[in-house]
Image: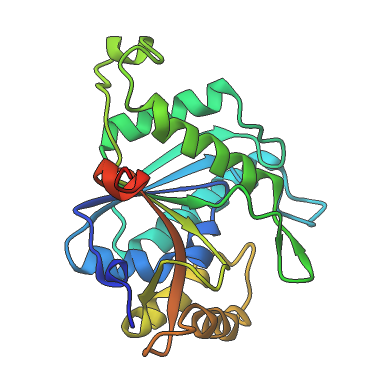
Length: 249
């Protein structure tokens, strides 16, 4: 039976990722579906992606520019209009207070109901892919920015001086490979957009991504009555206390 979250469409959402192209892998179909339904989506790129090249002639500065342009193009395919490029160096990310403050700032700026990011507890994917340390650091810093930093007026009070008032995010959606994910979004009707968005990153990805997207989508639909999906672990922050703690005995 489909979970109620499968069909949920927030009014505003934010996707916080480590590198250009991360969002296209983990949630491009969901983003395309949400923007089509009127959701305002903001992409936040924590690092500049300036390490992803084996070309001896490539420089970090040039690569960062290429990858920002690719991310803007991919986002446009999915209906994303807002972008924040925080500019931390690729490959060196740690969930410091400076990183948390910057994510807190953009959360307060754009006021998303839902934030999609990485599950920082996910150390491995399958049997052959260690999760990138930048992904885990981004997930940690983002969750900490949501709760409690963006919410609490006295945390990072310097942000108040620039007009960034506190904001309470309603839900955190963590991209997940857990078979028991609460939400599995039907992306069948927007799978072609997900494929096109992946191919908008030619500095990183080749045409084989079209088939890989289908494989990911089939897995994401497991247990549901649709062909392609994306899976998420969902933390509902605005649930009534009794739903969180249970009724007292």
